Amino acid sequence: MAVTKIWAIKDSLQRVLDYAANPDKTEYDALAQTLHYAENDAKTKLNESAQLVTGIHCRANHAWEDMRAVQERFGKTDGVVALHAYQSFREGEVTPEQCHEIGVALARKVWGKRFQVLVATHMNTDNLHNHFVINSVSYVDGKKYEQRRSQYAEFRETSDKLCREYGLSVVEQPKAKEPARYARMREAIDQAREDASTAEDFHRALYRQGYIFGSDPNRRYATIRARDGGRAVRLYRLGEEYDLAAIDDRLRGNYLLYGPRLYERKHPPRQYTPKRYRPKDGCAGKGVLQIFFEVFFGESQMHRLYLYYCYQLGILPKKQQPRINRPELERIWKDTEKILAEH
Image (cartoon, rainbow, N blue to C red; front, side, top):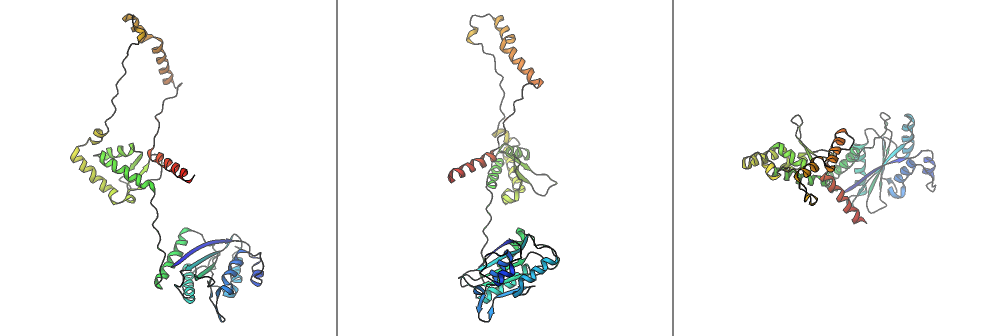
């Protein structure tokens, strides 16, 4: 089982020779420290006649001079000067020779076509491990090493492949945790499929729950996203039972059983009932004509008419319906519970 990691090193290279000659010094540049640590005799000596240090496109005993020469040739001696990586094995799983052999093969496959690499196997701990020092400047074209996630993934995958070839165990990658919003989207789709028998009603049912359903025939995948403008999710990511074909089958079944108005039956529209005038107690003893003039030409009616014209002229702001987004509220509430738990 091999554990891997890689990180960048930034520093000047002026003091590297002094450090290599005098390990007791405390001020050294980053590449010098890394090369010296990787080549340290106390950690790499297998016996009196052999050390497990190998240079790829550079001399093991003159790694700094060779890497520095490439950097000076292309005028790139500052910024990220090197990459430092390691590969660690489980205790007792490999011999020092096997550990070094795997490390050299790994360095050749991942970086050897464009970069100089120093490979050193350390035996100062119970877990044998390889250190890799990679020149940040390519000896082929002078381009700098681009640090991307895909490159670390290649490093990790190549290491695992070599471990399998040598009959060693590998660290199984855990499955990525599914976003919580996927579960809420599934719940919304399930509810919409129960409440609708047509595609239009299905869209309305999802919109009612705070989602927008996209099924453009010119696009390859149907999507669903929150009304607040969140990122759209393709349906196939939610599972086979939530793809467009499964939804169409369910809607077709609802149509045969309940007809085209299932959504209206489950969510009947609100009926508007105009308010009727009810005379107050102050109208007692008043004549019909007096009540008529107070209702249609009284102070309250005139005031309402005044407000109506102010509204039409734009003097008064128009009342806006509040926007309630269920997914967003659930996310905020979930964060609140997390914060309370942390406190």
